[in-house]
Image 1 (cartoon, rainbow, N blue to C red):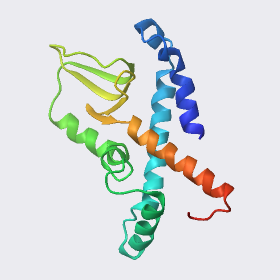
Image 2: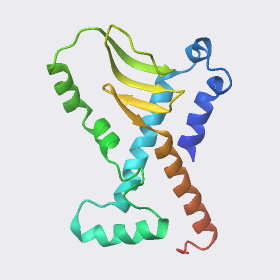
Image 3: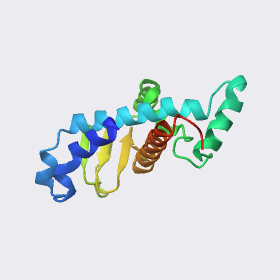
Image 4: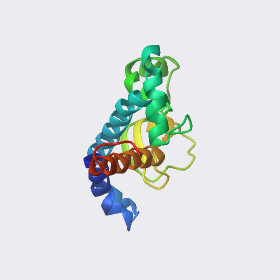
Length: 166
């Protein structure tokens, strides 16, 4: 799976050396873009399993059964997907509240500790907690990544078996 492999490659420098110096060498924008690609792909995949329109719900239930998915799957949670798909609207609402402190547009590194000056984080990934941040709201990304990877492996297995549900 290209997205997973690429993300692992981008984060390789900090796997064994979680120092600030190693994090400074990361291509932050590439890491964050790759995570957004993963989330976008997962959202598209989720639509097969949880279709929005009633005529297709039976197909979704059938596929969930065949792939061993239920509503506890990270794919079922639309909160992160909506945070990205409706970023512009949420940014408008976020900015209406008023801000003081400092703004971080893109960040990849260790999760920051509590600071007296508030930080407004637009987009970040904390390598030590595997949490993705959108407008100061944190989302677990590792579970979503692992679920997409599990489905990918299952689909490859099905392909080898003649594309049959077993």
